[in-house]
Every structure is written in C-alpha cells, then in structure tokens.
View 1 (cartoon, one colour):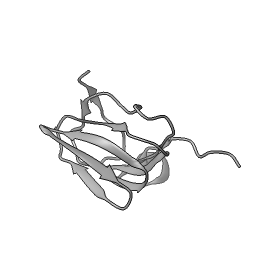
View 2 (tube, one colour):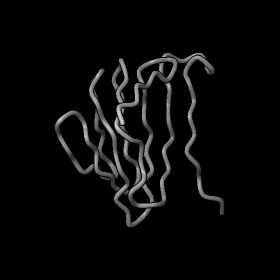
View 3 (cartoon, rainbow, N blue to C red):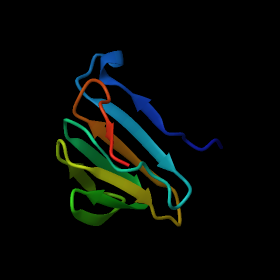
Length: 102
C-alpha cells in the first residue's frame, strides 16, 4: 500500500473560495517553519499529534481536534510522532499567501 502524500489544492483551480493542504508527515520533528497568512487557517487533525505554536501559545493538537490560527498570526507546527501526523489545513483564500518569518 502506498502512503498518502502531502497535497495542496488552491481554490481558484477548482472554483472554490478556500485552499486546502492535505498534510501527511511520518517523521517526528517535521513541519513548516514560522509563518503567517492574511486570512485564517484551520487545522482539522485526523491522525497523530503535533505541537502547534499559534501566536504566543503552544498547544498539542491530537486526532479529532480542530485548531485555528487567526489572520496575520504567526504559527507553525511540528509532528510529535510516534506515528504519522495526518490533517487537512484549510486556508480561507482561493490562493496560498504566505509570509515566512523564519
């Protein structure tokens, strides 16, 4: 069986006002560096766990939870393992707009 891969879909490509990242990480310690968007990003965690930094707060997100990074709020996450981290990240914009801070 082939493992699922991370996949990005920008909303404008499919006639939607939102863009989606289907995130799949198998290695603990992986994740995007600190960044922000001019719109909200919602994380729907389906499997595994990750440590999220959203603004000044850190929080462990686990399967079944939904976390939100408000617009213009610096955020990042790192997969904690031991198993894969799988989630859907919803960007409230038809294109990805990202300012990398690290």
